[in-house]
Image (cartoon, rainbow, N blue to C red):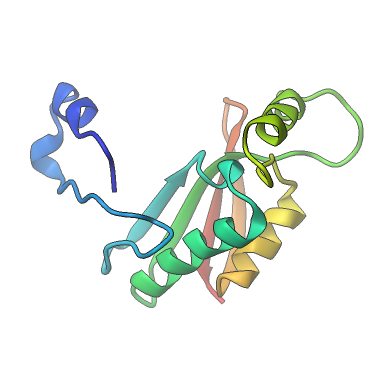
Length: 133
């Protein structure tokens, strides 16, 4: 679900996908093999973030996956790119924040998913793979 298909058209891939508008807090289109949620959960409190994941879980087939692309806050007090973003999220959106792997795992569980694996990337983001619990 995207609000503006222009970037897809600019990239020359608009003919390879279907653009569907909507509200991810209400429902997502059903039947996709994978649902990619990129840098979305950090904008929401736990209840709404779990609802977004739950909507994906309800829409996907039994062997589907939810791929969440987010920064993951490591434990401890060492400086990381996620910490300033965490403060920024708290200031901009009530309840929003950068979460730890354990906190994200809890959100997946609340949505009926199991956090299957966390894949590090060269960027500050990780890919979290969720499958049906």
